[in-house]
Image 1 (cartoon, rainbow, N blue to C red):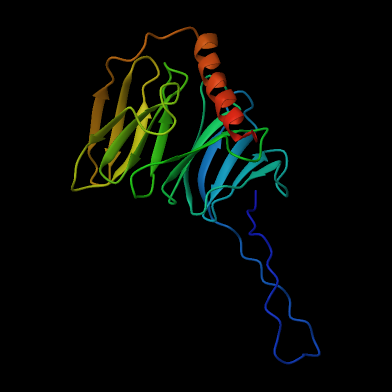
Image 2 (tube, rainbow, N blue to C red):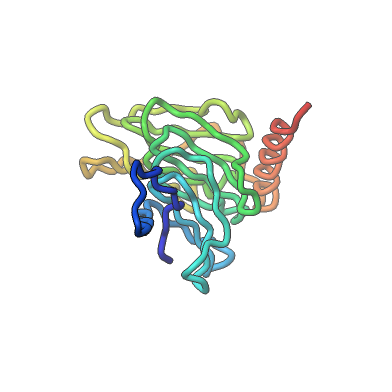
Amino acid sequence: MVLKRPRKKPPNPIMKKKHTEPLIVRHAVGTALCFTDDEQNIYFIGTEDGQIHKCSCSYNEQYLETYNGHTASVYAIKCSPFIPDVFLSCSADWTIRLWHADREKSYLTMATHSSAVNDLAWSHQHGAVFACTNESFLEIWDLEHSTLDPVHVETVCVDTTMSVVLFTEESDTLMVGDSGGSVYVYAMKNFPSVGTSAEEATKLTSVLASCLSSQLPT
């Protein structure tokens, strides 16, 4: 897939010229990539312009969908392990956005500390729980509990930047990597008991429904 920037018209020239100068369209830079679990030929690409594109391995000349919302580089995109069409994105614009693949507009925008959000990861145990990293902090969010603030913020190390976060698939354990090459391992405690996959998917669906209802005019 060749990423292209939106075409912009050049400014009007002061003097007319006999020959029209061609428009210059630079290729956009891809900054994040995520394949879906249910359709292996479908993937999402985040760009330095803040756009997210849904693409197919079968088509290399056009996007299936474009999602606008972020105003700076997209650093990570992660699909939910319970509902593959639902995904999170994080950006240098200090925000995290919650999306559904069938909707161009995000369901939810979450602001973190005043810094870029470098990475995020869904929990494989809890449908509405995810973690993200920014600067020296690790944030744990439970969207079923709150969509405004994380349920826990951990200062990992003040001397380095937290760059990567990952949940293990079989437990409430997560790992965080920093710019200095260190890896930190955490175990989450006091979270609700884990339900079936269908029950955890229902939790996330309820979050989406609540976010959508709050966007409707009253």
